[in-house]
Length: 296
Image 1 (cartoon, rainbow, N blue to C red):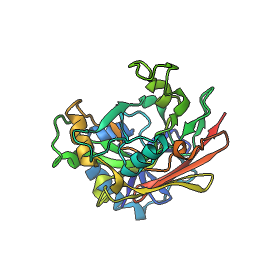
Image 2: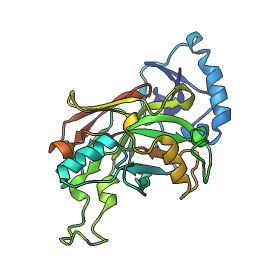
Image 3: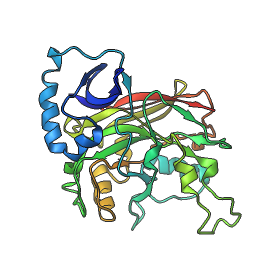
């Protein structure tokens, strides 16, 4: 297995191959977007190059960067894990819908593409935010243009997967309306799209190396304390269905990223939130793990 990574080894940002802790420059491509724009050809070239990794000396003094620092579009699916919906139903003391509710479909929102930061990032806590929450998520990287995609064909549009954290400023979610029935009460920009709100890493694992995307263990730690411990099998709408449903509304493009939801264990359910100095590690089986920290 190989991964595709973005990194800097002292000569500026490059893309190349990652095998464990070893990194190899790719002379064929200059950016991740270039790779994704010609995904099938790129995958063939990178697969061939990966077979020669053992013959090459790995690069030294590598700084790992976000695998896709400039997604074309950054979508995220809300409330898409059974265990997360169950925990929030308990916290809010109300029945929240999941797939058992007739007529419920996936719920998508947009996050600013400029929110992406990489492994080791120092994410600045937004001014006035006291309820900064974590959400480990599987990120789907689209590698082929598509519209009205069938569930059967959906995975053929996936270039690969990476790990993301959909950081959320919970106390900025509302605009201060006392009338909770107001249609203008939500502020998704402040809630989800502040600078650094989407840490992503460590690399892109090509879809050909993921045998079952609906059975991957996923975990998140804050200062080495395990907070989220679940599996992608908990998704209400699986990756196939998410891609298919989203493509009924928008044309998916190479370089688009879809965050697929977070499982149980978020800070809101625990009454615990991130503060300056906190170190967050997130991990998804087969895909990888990375860390970042919060600062003032």
